[in-house]
Picture 1 (cartoon, chains in turn green, cyan):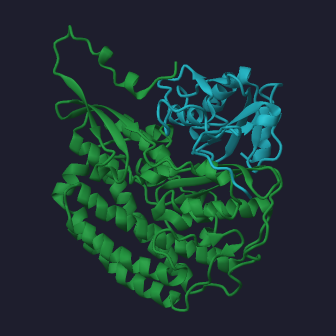
Picture 2: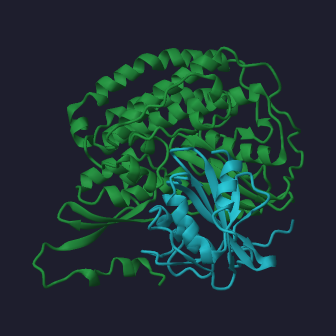
Picture 3: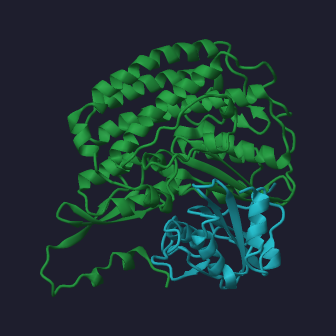
Length: 383
Length: 154
């Protein structure tokens, strides 16, 4: 009953008596530039047409959930940096928030405002990187340079406040690791004035390009019902026309106080997924603009950094909207200082599965475009 | 629907259902025998419209000799959520697959099989997902040991 990969790709199913072109299996990855890491896709091809995609995961599986059982509630937050490394602060936030809710640790308005600002900056940063790499996957190198150039501005702001550029480890139960840098507000404001006219430049460079449009339109179509059934979340789900965004549905942080829209697509093809992310960046700029001028005064940490955390026994779950979809943390506490079980509900693990349903029938080139439009980060899948 | 209303309606579906205490999200205990019936009504009943299986995972309770499988549903229409808990014996745990109701379950059930060894009946493609096909044991069980694991002195 339990199968292996070998059983799966065994050619016993092909019927030789029927005259047909030869179908064959090709490995794409684990070391392939457009798989963004170590994702392996076993492709069943008929010429250049993709007949079947079998994702093979686990090349960067680090046993994070098992590891989290042997360390404390505060330490497991470090691990979430290494899941989706482009959303590290948002991941920290979820895993800190679930501990806060479980152990009834309070936070204040200042903490929540800074968390929201940093999370939205990181959403812009993540989408900028995606935009650059997306262009590169489709064969355009220039967006990559633009994306990294502008991403660097945010990375610099984070470096000043947080001290890290990638694995931030910034948010902890009861507050923030450090208070914001004295120049933070000034830097963020000058970044916002810098980035706003650039969106038009990105559109002129890539969005309006006829080759890009031809490559993306009507490729990898996923209608709303399919997108929900396939478990996708985030921009992938919203591109299919489902306005499902946790920032609106159950607002956390200070999202209930800001005014922003949720961009949604209509067709659910690669083009919509592209457009949704481009619009999301503009909305994130709007959110930061509304918050940056009135960061409330207060402490950046409401509890002692070394204080023991012992949530009462029970199951706790918290989820938030990261740049790739819903990231959730489920903790089962047994009342001690270490969690009895930690489960990370990662957006990419669920989003990548849709590739098996939407890419068959297309070409290999389309597969690369679909994969890139799903915005996958492999460590997030493998945990 | 509020969690209280949802709880009332769901507990009224079947007398075997009960509330699973100590959970931040509304969680209902379902016996494995009536799981399929409940799952179908969660999916099909227009009052619930649970169209999204948010995640599926398990907890290991070696002292009580059971594995507790958790399903977390949410509705993109009503935005309410619900968790279902099913307890299975640790030796030879078997559950019916719900992948024909929520296709993503095919992917999630493979992970629970990989980590806890729960066998899913009628699963279209039950394989290990994160570990190698020839891996021995199920790592997220509490009693899992292999030669690479280190004993911590603290």
